[in-house]
Length: 337
Image (cartoon, rainbow, N blue to C red):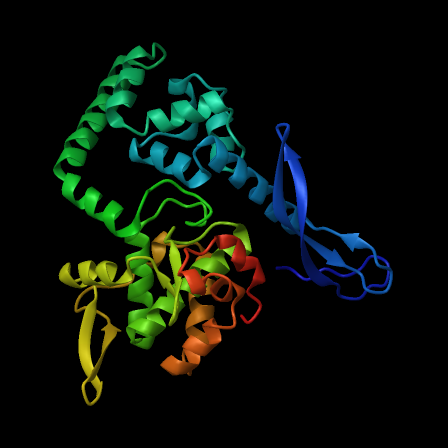
């Protein structure tokens, strides 16, 4: 978060957060409002950055409540068809800039949101394309070929898709996924990053992933991977983590070695798989900076120290007794990093 100086005293102000209610489309939502507080005058100020964080929280809750698509979903749907935002808007019958605005964070109307979700299915999108009378014949033909390829690929990869849903849970974004659709590919790249940098034990890796996702949410109200985390005795862990890591290992995406820690005690250590490189291109610069920050923070800690560190988090303290899934709103309470 960018530092802000008081326009009254010229001194740096502390960033504060508190629960407030905001109204959007005649509905009320509770968020963690971000603002800067001038200690000497008692005045509160906001910046463009804090205003955006506050608005995104409201928009996320509204989308979740009304089952509307999120910006990343909207962008992914268009990209898989190889279309520009303007062309996608034309096919769906939206205003010229509407689709681009939705990708940039504007909340679509309920009817437009439903239509966008519907055309995520290539079969249904093909029907919409057939009805579009503004496309040139060759343009429509090329797009239809692309759609047919996607339909074929989806049938061919049905097992893989079902396996990812089994491992990561529902693909619908919500407050437990950081309002991002669970992304197995991105999670794998996060694991590869830490395996290459730190060769962590499994218990440590779980915390590295937790902090990466939750710090991303603290910065922009969206997680990196969409993974849901559960509070257990050893600290926060990705839900279903053993099956997730086993699947990655079986696919040779990562090396997992069972090592004797002491007599009759074994641990799993992660390292880079041969000829498998970390793909930095799928991450934003903010996300890459967070991965580096988390790696640096925990590089000198042993397993017990990492566990103790995570036990100081409100996210763990308030959920561990019932081993509950952790709401990403707890990211705003993380202040150790």
